[in-house]
Image (tube, rainbow, N blue to C red; front, side):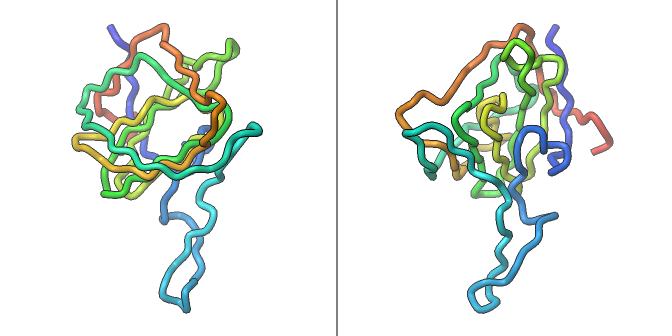
Length: 172
């Protein structure tokens, strides 16, 4: 029987060990362009490691997932952060885990967050996470991450099977 991962609301405080929440809410802003635009400055930090890497902007289209969602592997990008920003108000599920003592995901501390369509995430370099899980509909995303010739994706099959069934750990 798979282990159940209950959803948590995606907040800056809860997600801080894994990365940044990219959103306008709860962030300071200042006016630019003669006061016609609000700039929410520095809502995430792009991390680039290694000699051949640079920050790049890509586009991605994620297929639709439906509950229950099976989780059997995680990946990480040791040489840079990776941001996922929805362009069409598409919600998605964010599954993360801290690094364990054996340099694998700590399976006893896997967490799942519900990202509302106006929220993006920026995984810190080396954060174990599941690939994109767009919820209920296809979704388009802006991806900001490290581009280079050195491999930057470690994949790890989990020892246990996990499932996100759509229930919440709290009252939502």
